[in-house]
Length: 109
Ligand SMILES: [Ca+2]
Ligand SMILES: [Ca+2]
Image 1 (cartoon, rainbow, N blue to C red):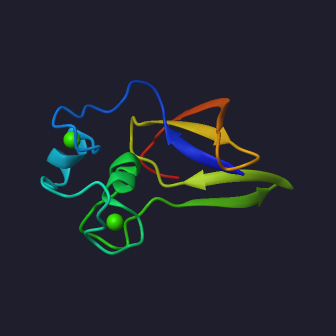
Image 2: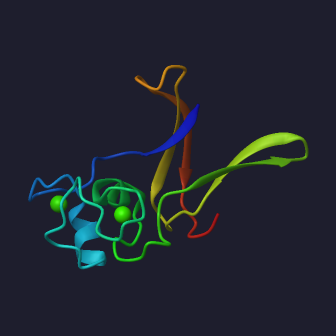
């Protein structure tokens, strides 16, 4: 299995609520619970924070697709410009290892 994770320095979280302070300011999402799901999209607000999705828009949630391009499997996701993404792999879903691939978000797929 392959998943995406935030890369580089940990997100700033000076109020220790497990959600990026930058994300909280960007989406005016102060006071949301890390385990909560304000927009009922099936992803916790902490997960939305890591994926930089809008916590008030249930159509904005972390998503990854696998497509074939020239017979090769390619991973796609909606990125944010300048955000660093790491591709992680796991064979047991309990531990994950970086594939070493870091992608810088372009603002598109
Ligand atoms: Ca925070
Ligand atoms: Ca959510």
